[in-house]
Image (cartoon, rainbow, N blue to C red):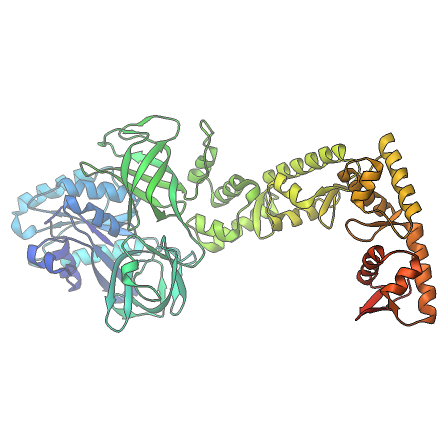
Length: 623
């Protein structure tokens, strides 16, 4: 529960009277008699096993930024209005903030009743009820109370209990996420951070990541309201003792999360809404952005319009001066930098937006705002295109239970909307487009290169736009249409075809190699003798090797099949009478020179026909 209300309306005094805990912990607060920063307390209801953590916020207009840091994690609010003053400016601003954050439930305490006459109190109560009409608190309990005399405290406690039992619990099955609102050190313990856990659970000795810093730390201790815990749960006020990170590295606005699951961002696609009394907001305006305990300056880009007027809403993008941690479905608040004024807020739709083209339809943002969880996940995968997106990234992108996300993804797979390849999810539309590009590029390649066995796999992958891991699995999906052979890919229907010029070259190459026997010319020499480009010779040599007319000795040297078989025959006859073969003996055996004998022997070794032992070869198998 968070408090809300104007300065000096008795919020902190009520918290102390209810709990026995003074939320004003700073020396300056006690000296000046006003709340400056967030204060914390808790109220126990043993019969229900219910504990209500309380975040007490400052009411001064210059300290709304501190109020916002406390309001981001609350489930219910206690709006406090003093009976002697009635509704004041920060009463209105704090209520607007609670509505922008969509805090679902709350109650209202009319404080300082000991300072007014009953008739005046009745008038103030009616005025407060009129003020709340149309807001989420219009039917909330309205309790007159005095922290000084104790009158109405029991009724206020009962109202808090009833509202708390109606409040919806935060999801403990999500990713652990806790915005930091305080950082300090304790002698003998080191760095301690506190905050309200927004989602998930965290156990002792687990590793956490602090964003946007990107540092990891180990959880040495957990406390909630001063009591040691073995586990922190969403919805609790939590203090974490972190090992491996210094106090000076941390500040309010940092977020403690499960490692590797979330990431920070400097841009957010959002639904913007302006309050009814706010000044118009033009595209390009600079505002103060508040989310969780973080604060940053932001430039506003409105989609489809140039100006947003009071009481209106639209889609847009916020481009931030500092990185923040956000998930789709988070709520935020916007304030004017000068004069300081809350002007609106809204809903995060895409925390990791892509670059959007001018006049591009906003269908994806509509789905992110209004669609089911499955609809939102499907759209995010679709917009990821050929890059795909992992299940882990999707879990960090949207604020939801991990089990619900997994079930939605499984359902989308069963419907054929998504497919998991190489650890990433891709939409069927992205795969259809990738297939279209792949088949088109291979077809064009074959037409331009009728002698080549296929396109280099890496070149094709770059054209299709899939990652290496995904591409291998994608090729297996298309096994009926394409063939992948080592690092070359071809259409399954492709066969090398020769025109008249290629047929003439084929015969010329075979003739040259047949004539040269055991001293075949290498690629460069062959290209020079036949007066054709070396690339064309390479393609022809590979084609003839694939047809079985030639045998590849190495990348540059090919031997005619008849010469190769004659060599194997001579080799077999030699080993019939001798157990070892030297280079010189092999050279003489084939009537060649050392220049050709060495690469041929190395080829025989790689084919496991011979085995090199020192300076001699032994027969491994009958050729």
